[in-house]
Length: 123
Image (cartoon, rainbow, N blue to C red; front, side):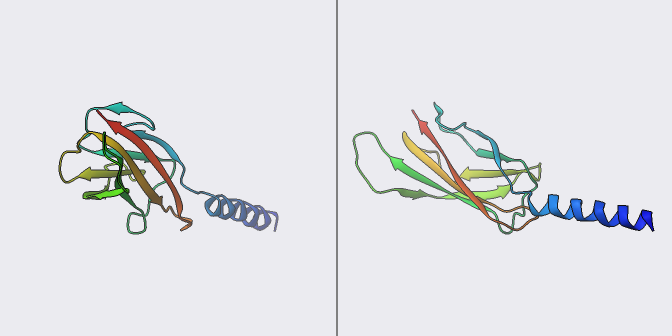
């Protein structure tokens, strides 16, 4: 009887851990606020394995030197990385000089979507 109670308590703790396992953005390449050359790909590294069918991202140019404009979507391919905790955004053409924002949505095993963004500049 004691073994059953211990098993039930352990199972309850395990399930509550899964229910609270929201993915958190741990790092990105380029990093938040980075200034540098145009990246061939942008990588987002999360704390949890992603459900790629529910996760995604948009790449948006928010500023271009000498030109005011509304945020301009950039064509990019979004895929999972070799690591299930990584999302890869690959621009379909080289990024011109300007400021960019990656608007991401990450979903892990708890199926609760978490959103955020990363901003960087191309010089």
